[in-house]
Image: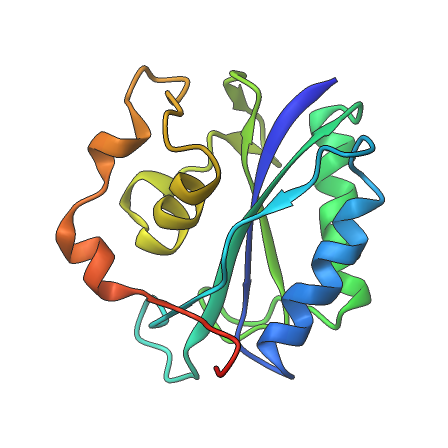
Length: 162
């Protein structure tokens, strides 16, 4: 068993419902009783593509899947929810990114873990912090040390009314 962290993001076709369905699908990959998900956050899109705001979260769970098998399972969940890869950083029904696979450092043609941009992205770091505030990344950085007030100001935690 290995503990993994997966970023979730959506901004099309009912983003909150997309994340809810993704969590249900991720449960099937998780060891019993190990699945957790952060609160959902609203964030502005990255890049120059005009599109709606995103809803983001991070999930964590224990799994027996090897890294590439997990990546395949995540991509199958994305596809089942209508994900199309048309424009880099474009709008999407669902984006699932494998952030951490235990303490592993993975660099292959298909997969880089830790996720290459996670240290700069408030919509990853804050939900990750909600789940694992004392986490030390494989590079030795304390998660808490990467989060600043600007990052906190960029996100809006969703409530029941959102």
